[in-house]
Length: 358
Figure (cartoon, one colour):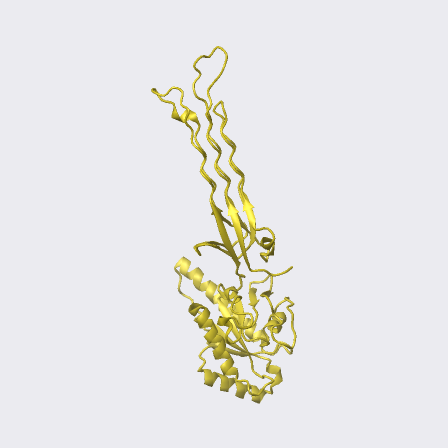
């Protein structure tokens, strides 16, 4: 199925039913009086999280969604039926905003979560409400109010604990394939990844985490070069970024340190907060260098970048360093979860995990 992470739709809530003007007409009962009932409320439009969906492609084909109108009121004080609400399933991780004004509406982050995006109109009143001592036969009623109508921008942002960042062909797809059961497209040319891939590492255990691979970012992406920055939003909810850099580029003129700087510059243009997020340096394709050359390249890169965070050298082919990287990620995420739990319970007797000791 084609991966689509943005869609624009129109939602229309149901109008409220009109109130009824009616008078009681029964044999042997003169001057029966008003008995017009109220209309029914219009149906509302809701978005509902569905963990079985992973794309917004369906909204490219069906763009208009309308809830049911409320039924008009009837005689004998009978109220019109309420219009049925419309529930639209969306993938978990969908962010919703008004397409015309840009106003944020909300996010759907859990399976079954409901988000009201268009409220139904209110019912009109029947003439029974206008009866008084001076107006015994009112012919007034009110119309139902219109339901909300708006254009929505839906953006799917994948939910992952760890995000992979790097230039095209830096080894991101190979890494996610080596760590998880995900099978992204892997080839020896740039831009083999055209849409985000998710992989679950250690499924079914307390060590499990979700890792996201996005298409490579190149210099000038903020101006639209390559695939641009359209997929960087998928890193917005990650807790940790792994910055992959090819430690043994085929072109000897390529400077790995400069490549890292280029990615950081594009991150800062896109979102300074994302650029400040915790980021580990992962040197990929370590199997192409012998141990001495690898140590020298690592030390040179750390020195040129003045890097203060954790550094890992890995190979997705020989699995060199993968276990150490996975263990460090697990400990780091468990530490973050533990810190959140302690903040909730006001417990602070545990030492937080320091990734630099990995």
